[in-house]
Image (cartoon, rainbow, N blue to C red; front, top):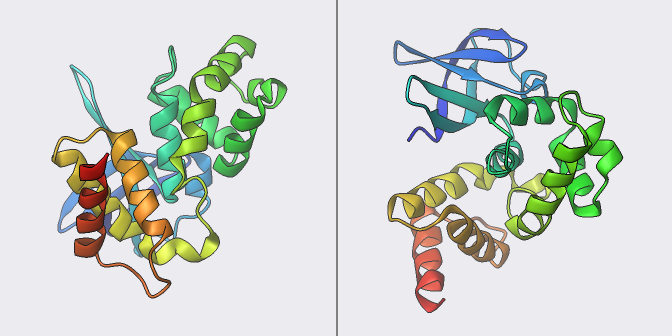
Amino acid sequence: MIARISGKLVYKSIGRIIIDVSGVGYCAFIPFSSYCQLPEIGETVSVHVHTHVREDALQLFGFIQPGELDLFEQLIKVNKIGPKLALNILSGIPHEELREAILQGDIPRLSAVPGVGTKTAERIVVELRGKVDSTGLALNRSPGDGDHHGVRDDALSALLNLGYQRAVAERAVAQVMRVATTGGLSLEQLLKDSLRLLART
């Protein structure tokens, strides 16, 4: 599973980018919010990736902010919401505002997003209100946490590869990072502390 891509941005348009990594071009679909944060062509960019595997295709969905990726992966778990609609939702409303709309059950705000009707908005609230509230790390991250994104993602990826469910792994990593010192946390220490926490649950 591809979880993150870093390389030279060789193409960008609203909805799609191509990143060159050692001569290999990776195409990823992106929300409008991520497009607005892209650097200029030729500059280095790093995106968090959801790998979507279908019977006839393998698609990458990229996000500049980890919070966008987290919400995207929650949205596609909702009944009748696929990757394209989830991407459209994140393009129509900032992920922080989307999170608040879900928590507050703001059906009118959600249904105002193109492609989302009242019934879909209600499903989002019913199925995600609790999950969004408990995600903790990326969805409630303070602006100063940017240096921890890569370490967090690597630790989460390692836990997923070990067989832990995403929600369980996310809660463990979030809890460890919340009590970490401001000086930072190494990947090795984060992984060890997360596994220790998981072993007690």
